[in-house]
Length: 616
Ligand code: M6R
Image (cartoon, rainbow, N blue to C red; front, side, top):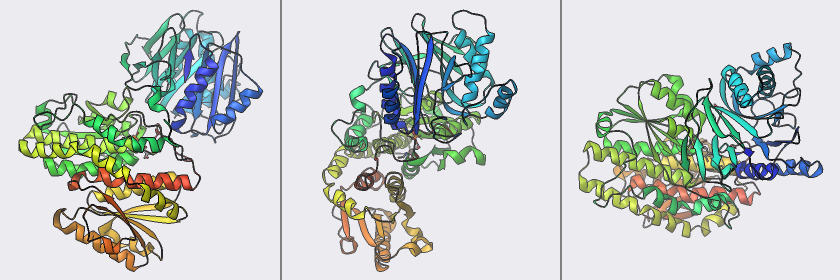
């Protein structure tokens, strides 16, 4: 977070950090320049710890400031490793996201010229280098920005750096390579933030920054953007389509509960304007020509975490509707195995934040290999859509809780849209077939609302399961990714060991861990699903029950076959098989959230996790 303007920078920066808390962090700090002095404060732990320090030793009122919440990479989450880092002479303060990969060489260089380091971070080296570069430059406007360009050219890795300097009390300068950074433009005031949440309380006008760019925000000169060599760049301006209220809890105990409740609206917004009146799809924003879409002969879906689970669900729908082979890959693995890609390959990258470094690197690899990249993304102005050939935005609104919920459901819906649009453009489905699926998509918001209305029993169940040591999740066909997602949610929120299995794999090993009382949650496919998958899963329920499992069964309305074998039965509305994950996952989101709450844990900011993983 950076600020230049007439208000008290201390308040603006701390408020910005509070709004960015959701991204996950383990220390925080702030620096301001006032009356010819640069002062800073930093502390390990949550922002409240920093605020205590500031209450004891207040910083002076100031009109420029920078602030940071750090998620430790190099060096533990201690006071000394917290940002900002100051140059040895105390004239320059720097905050940093990302990893400086060549920091060891640069550190040795600084040490050989007598600099003593005071932290274990990769970041500190940039403060010393900036001070040295600044001193070497002639006096004049834009000197800090020029020093930033000089230093940035020497850095390897991913970074957003934000710096302030005692000699330029009206200026904050930043630099970005592969890590997120956006500029907020207010009335006579300017902001920098990892995302727009940092300044949404003050302005909705934002500027996107590109790769390898330096931005200066200055009280009189305004915003200047250049590349690392000083050539002026015109940034892309956009207006954020949500306001500060959208990022408030709105009466809920947790952001996650609010975001779960928002899912019907988020799905409706994601469908809005994309379902044509004649029953077809209208995806004008997908900037790929019909010919390019017809030329595709292979699809990769690449993503991480929960977004990866959306990709697994996408595979079933896209292959079924288009008959194009689809492979789903973890972004962190994708480029390292040298996948076969060419001009007729479509790579669909899915990312709620649009900033996940693994996914970004996978997309760059795909584009280097001449594949077409289509991003499914929620965060407007983020890096992944900017670097993709085409983008389909989900309209979930800001997702603040670290655990993705409405982001996930809208990703699944966006994947359906992509699959169906491909089928429509390629003419592999008759118009009435597309129209029938579109009609089913229109039912999704109400179907999710119906599930949400019946969650009291799940809350009760959460209290019963809160002390479990391990919980298993089984699913088959599209229920398998749902099982994986249910297990991930439980792990990340409740810190309970949980595993998702393909139900058919049970007898090939996992059944050995089932013991007396082991909770096993089973996502049951529709009795109308193909090739008696339903019957096989019902058999799986009996198999685990026979070995002592406590069975928790998620099944559609009217499925009576499961009743005798379910210790707990959770009903969901009937939907076509491929669309069922949109409703079957909802009870699992609620369950994980409620178990974590019952265990007294921080549901919105689970330990060790960051909302947006911007390092590889
Ligand atoms: O922003 P992204 O969708 O790229 O994030 C991917 C994962 O980091 C994310 O889904 C993560 O698994 C969440 N904690 C899931 O709740």
